[in-house]
Each structure stands twice: as structure tokens, then as C-alpha cells.
Length: 167
Image (cartoon, rainbow, N blue to C red):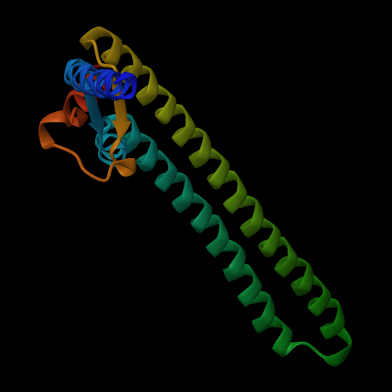
């Protein structure tokens, strides 16, 4: 008889506990954002991308000038006597090394600027999401990339984008 009572008591606790957890889950407010969409829709991202594009084009123009210089030196090399060729070839080799260093440095500078821009924008997005979540009483706001299932009604990407662009 004691075991039946204990089993019934445990079953009753599990049932009540299940109802309680379901009720608590219903009271939780959750949302998600499409981080890629928010990032790409943020005006600051578009402006920063345009600035980086201009810098990349300027670096490309500088690179083209170096390449043209090397081509001109190679053309001149063909017209020189054997004695003068060695000296001109050394100058060409030096210019090629300069071009390689320029390429490496340019890529590094542009990548660092892009990384800093991304880091700053993601920080701003995080701050807005934190404030939005607190102001609107959210328990959780997720990045949609980690969700296997989501209801469109919980997508707050547009609100976050509007808040960012209003800054």
C-alpha cells in the first residue's frame, strides 16, 4: 500500500511539475533576429562598405601604376645592350618585390579596417538588441542561425534595423 501511495505521489508531482513548466514557458517572451539581414540593412554598414570599396579602388589604381612601371621597365630592357641588362633586371626585380609588398600590405590594411568595421557594427547591434530586449520585456532574443524552428511572428529583425538606422 505504501508503494502505491508513493507511486501516486510521484506521478502527481510529475504531472503538476509538467503543467508548471508549460505555464512558465508560455509566460516567457522570446524573439529572434536575422543578424545577416540586420547587418546588411544597417545604413552604417552600407556607408562603411562604400568607404572600403573606395579605398580598395584607390589601392588598385596605385597597384596598376606599379604594374605599368614594371611593364615599361621590361620593354626598356629589351632595347638595352647585354652589359646594361643586368643592372636594369635588378631594378625590375626590386620593383616586383615592391609590388608584392604593396599587395600584401594593402590586403592586410583593408582586411583590418573591414574587421574593425564589422566588430564596431556588431557591437552596436548587440547594444540595441540588449536595450530592446530589456525595454520590451524579452526573456531571450536569439540569432536565427541557431534556431531549427521559428515562428515568423517572433522575428524582430525589422524593429532592430529601424532602431539602428534611427540612431
